Length: 233
Image 1 (tube, helix red, strand yellow):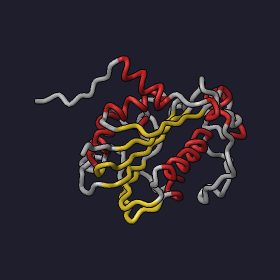
Image 2 (tube, helix red, strand yellow):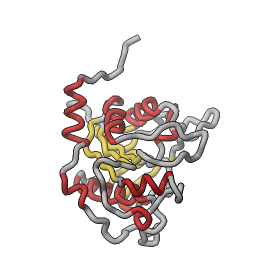
Image 3 (cartoon, rainbow, N blue to C red):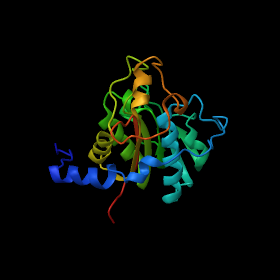
């Protein structure tokens, strides 16, 4: 049996950090625009703060890579606000639930129909074997297809017992690199006020009105990634 594990040297890991994860100083001074999300009633109130900045990056990135309109989109939730900013001819809904004989479970995803874009958010922390699931998503994509996801770095335990881990931006980068993806973009947001509120008196998912919108590089609370299945010619 062949070993298809991807290994990384210290130099390669540092290169991923410096080229994909490390952000310029102006990334941390950005301000949120007026909320553009219809399903959120065009309001940032009561929305988990990292998800607001995640949406901001998502809109920028899909414009940058011309992903506004695609043929086939696979998703794990029809409630993601990102769906308002991408048009797809066909949408397939999958699951990360662990129901017996559910072929849509990301851990045993059946490649019934490959897609051009796989969108799933706030899911990896609920996967007991995330590398297996991300490899399955890789196999579910057409050549040169894209995947986007967001994941918490700091968050209260939720949906227990199905909450297994939180992820740093670098951890997210290595997860997708280990599955064979080429990282296109990584983003993150957080501040110490969010951390204090999440684990303190609020013990919930603070919005920007509870913790402020300033982004502190040293205190990421959520991160997200756009990656591509690049197949050599």
